[in-house]
Length: 279
Image (cartoon, rainbow, N blue to C red; front, side, top):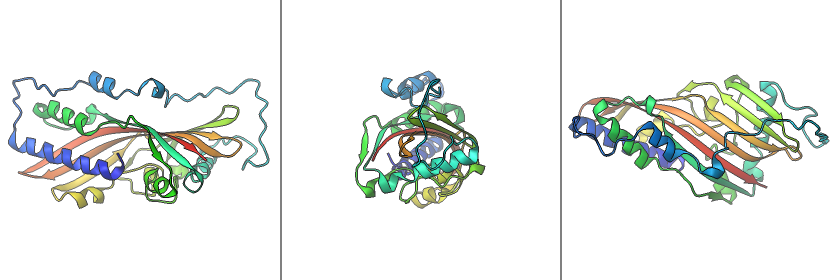
């Protein structure tokens, strides 16, 4: 599911929730068969065995590594400061769209952050059930094998770049030498209402308010807050090419909906996208 599809799904969820809020069709005294516990969501959204280590990248440096940095590399030392790591990441990430022969989205997980929900208690079970129904994971690989598909579907969609991240938006950055590869970890600062090309929106897919309002006139107020966003990239040291990258983007969506009255709704989701890149 790309960002455009998710926005359509989001509007469907908002419409359905608004209708339920307006009609009060849930019986508070009877347990809903649609109720889902936090444990159940964790079980249904946990990556399959081969994917469970997506955010557990190796950080140990081989004690007796004799790997030497070649003249072809852009630096003769491991990037260490936030500024150096961000610059190196940007350079590597922006090679993907012009140079990659194939990008594979190995999987995408969509996890409902129930603690972020602001929904009447009587509708809690229904809301969680709807989130699970609409927010299905991509478990089968998706292949982008043309220049157009890679440009328009990969992070950041419909742009010629993958990252314009600036160090001022980064909370934590590390670069580990794993012999033939660097493992880069970036944790971004929290940001409200990021826009494409700025802050979180310069390196991650983000939802902007105008995109929602264009699709639904009933949404009178829409805000986003992206928090604890993380990126982990594996870079081939010899070429400087990213060969594997994972994005984890939690987001809180808050809406005021005008449908049979005015209703305030808040929902939280975490998206985990795992990609492999070949050149």
